[in-house]
Image 1 (tube, one colour):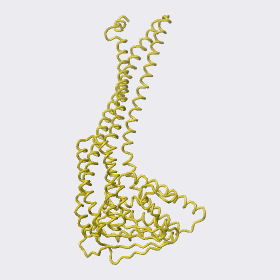
Image 2 (cartoon, one colour):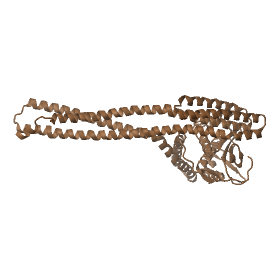
Image 3 (cartoon, rainbow, N blue to C red):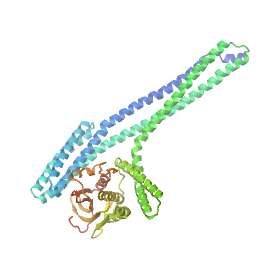
Image 4 (cartoon, rainbow, N blue to C red):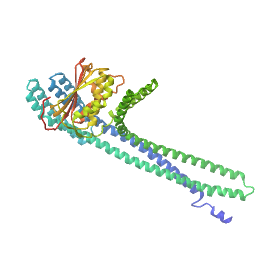
Length: 501
């Protein structure tokens, strides 16, 4: 007993010092993890605010700037084709929009290279605008040959300005990518520190438990066994005090674990949110075409089976749900970056035939007749057949919706010289519907604009975007009450005989 008592005497490494050290360690680990998490959250918010002000705003301004500039070129082309002064008025609107967005880009720009690019864009644009005005004046004077020659001369200026705009967007995309990389690195550091804090907290907790059981509870048990009549007051007061401290300690440990777990979950959720756009776009694009095929097959199956009323109702519910899914997918695709084109060498005539075969039952259900006018199959061009088929499907289904039940669609295939594409293949899709009112012709290509109650307003914008990604364009010609014609043009490098379209 004397040896045991001598070992239990207080010293520099007494029981009180060890318990205090463990408690301080737990508090420090918990406080350090919480403080670092709080500082990281504050810094993250500052990074996102700075990113929005310094990178996202200039990037949005650059996109709008480029769109306004491309629209100007389109309106000049329309004027060259139609000599309608209304296009010049719209050109002036886009000119003012371009100058306005250029001013906004200057106000939000904080990079020296970005400011230099904006200065070059402004300088090149004024040169281009002056030359373009000369082209317009030549057309007004009836000197179309001179106007065409001058228009071709300024094409390099247009491409140079477009390249500058792309470079301007690229430097801000690179800044955003760098900021994202920095954020991910910091997130990994915080995750590692959080895990280290949890491990340290667990180790300290086990150490404290070992100290309590081996050096507090065990001596108390021995003391109670060796002392028949112990001093109840002193003994129980000490146990109560120890119990209170242990309870407080365990509560602190639980709070620390909860706080660290919540911090780690917050970090994981933040990283997930950063990837949700790309994941949603990938999933949507992967299931969209199979979903369309399922819808067509389901429609074909329904026509070929003898169904009772309940089965017909089931088919209708399935079709409605598929349509709902298709709408959701289209919305995802509109707000996501389109996948890289899978270019193949194929005749657009073959794509037209594949599209009509895909929509055969749908066209029959609408009671629509389709005539294809072609002398020979169109020459092969570099195109993504699936994307081009998607554009044709959107245009044909829009035509069917516009005509209602019955109607006639004519598809004319041509090849020729189409400014500014040069050699090109042209597909004209004409329907016998009511046409499109003049005030709506510009809006039909805007995302989410639809005249249909259940429409998403994405069909025509997607088709237009597909053609533009191939280096071509999609135009609308319509006379209200006399149907609408959508003209698709794709560049072609094939050296064959050409007819001017």
